[in-house]
Amino acid sequence: MDDKVRYIIEDLLPLYHEGLLSEETSRWIEEQTEKHEEYRKLMVMSSTPLPKKEIVPPVNQEKMFKKINRKLSFYQIIFVAISFFLAIKTSLLNESFGFILWYTVLGLLVYLFYRDIKIVLLLSFVPILLWSFKDNLEHFTKEEGIFEYLSAAVGGAFFYSLMHCIFSMIGSLIGWLSIKFREG
Image 1: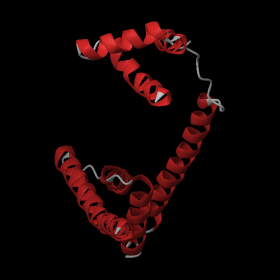
Image 2: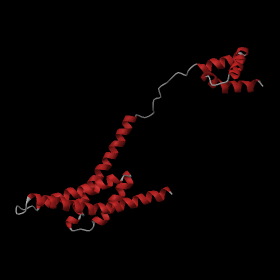
Image 3: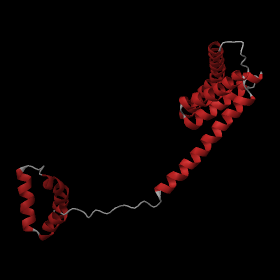
Image 4: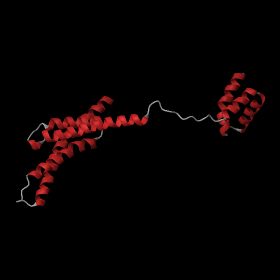
């Protein structure tokens, strides 16, 4: 019986210190602690707060995050370089239809890496837009008005970028479907 009383008191002491017990139960605990030295020690031990120690992580977090960020930056640079390379080598501007495959693969890989459709759009749209606009500006003649020429250059660059972006979106869709298939 004595062990059962000890376990009951141990279970009730946190509630006693918080003032969550009924008056009868609180009085019973106080009576028990007055009668038994062992219960009194339990009461004192449970009322004293534990010393607070600062937990030191086993690894240097700052160093670890720097390393991770460096690696991610490296991969981002690779993706941007691949995107610009594809923009230059396999675009409609070079009368090549290889962009259909390569931009689909680019969209797939970038989506699987980042899982963010905005980044896929950015990496597939911006390089072609810049390349196409630069290419259109090289063909400027003074016979046309500057406003008409610039609006045609921007419109053409936007159209080419949109064409490449469509195939990147198809690649992203394939990546999204493969992730959903893997998740079950």
